[in-house]
Amino acid sequence: MKTSEIRDLIDFISKSGLNEVDIETKELKLHVKREPDQKVFKSSPVITPVAATAPVAQATPIAQTPVAAAQPKAAAAEAAPASGKKTVEIKSPMIGTFYRSANPDTPAFVSVGDKVTKGQTVCIIEAMKLFNEIESEVSGTVIKAMVENSSPVEYDQVLFVVEPD
Image (cartoon, rainbow, N blue to C red; front, side, top):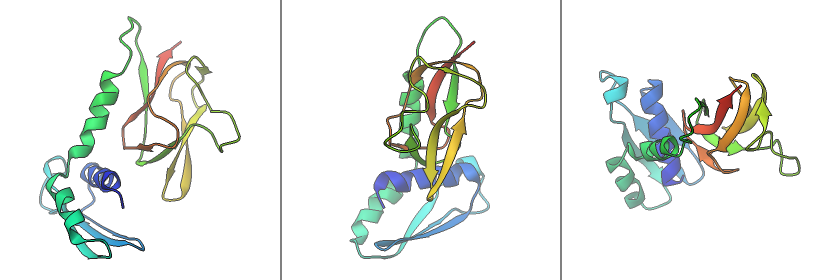
């Protein structure tokens, strides 16, 4: 598991209210537990390596920086256009991998400058081998694409900026 994936997981647990998560892959067994008596927004998840083929030293620095995943969101918010018109952000409803099209051989669902309608599919986010179509909540023109194709995304990360009609 990559450091960024673990940070995304910690961020998700902090926002979801889950108290405990176990993850097992071929290379790593990971147990993340949050104290149940703490509030969700003030909690600090604890990562406990159960068994790993990789050295345990790799897991230690991650436990020391559990909230470092908030930085990409701030950068995305600053990158929003400063035009005089009101804009709406289409945000990721989950952690996963962002895809602009259904497969590599088909064109992107939407590109900068395209008109979108409410309910139109704008991208796909893969989470745990499930492909979730993300729909626009507003009709308008896509003025900025904030994420590159095949990039990991966080919960509530801005995917597109749309100028409503």
